[in-house]
Length: 196
Image (cartoon, rainbow, N blue to C red; front, top):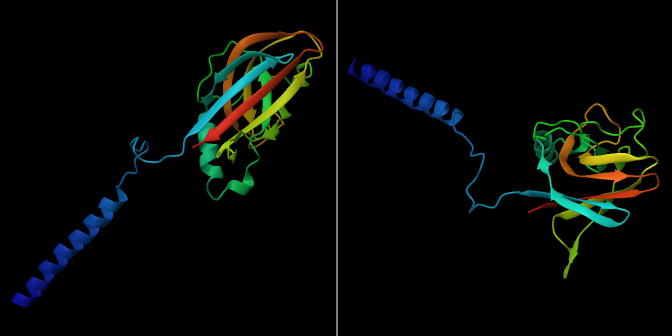
């Protein structure tokens, strides 16, 4: 009888420890922002605007929530289902941009007389240094030619050249000093990107 009670108590204690351990493991949290001493993946992005080959401005931009999720998903098993982030969009906005943006406000399209400034696939480029290609650096650029007089002050980079397409992701966006283009003026937009 004493042995049965001993084994019953032992089983209760072991069951409690096992179940407690399982519940403890289920509640483990993964740090979202590792300490600065750990190596992490970082993203950087600057966009430069040129009017008729003259620099207007270079500016850092805002990495959107969808851009972060896109990066997460591309680096994981879903990479084959996403398009390349190379479609450059332009617009004219008074909106304050934020990480939750999913579109370029007042984006120029063929439907709204975008004056030749509709979303276009950028040309891929890599940065080089003394030893060859700079690790983790790349760019996309496109030269737009205006067909009318128009103001431009916002750009975004997407995974599709078709506005409103299913699966469309605004990767990053920024506003810049308003540029007024006349017919035949060119606007070169270069997105410099890097990971480290």
